[in-house]
Image (cartoon, rainbow, N blue to C red; front, top):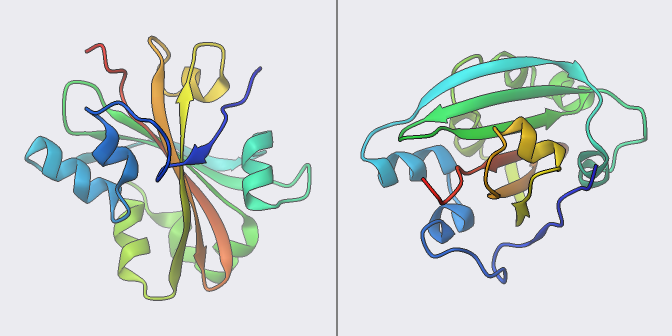
Length: 168
């Protein structure tokens, strides 16, 4: 399956209707709430240990075959939800066990409240049919996604949000 090509959000050509959300450097959940006029509701789809995808392994600089805690949620705040996927390596969970017990709480709230958290470069990608992340987010028309590598006390985690298609 083809993988997305990730570009720095600051220089990417983005659709005007979604550019502000895709380039948001603060809490995505908070920005989504401002855009739709109410706080989004978090729906936990699933969470468990699994093998990250190749692009996630490279972004996290993990050894091939390593497992990570994979959390998949939907943020409900409009017609179609925003899909989010987070990969947290075991050493990050060991350093911050609470990250593995977020349930239906927004991960961003915990990350942005912690002064020890550092955010890496914000990247964006256009997801097309045939890509695993596109299918996982609900398929249909092409979608835009964004991702960031966060470091919590020097330990990494990768957060990716996928916006609904523009044709709604």
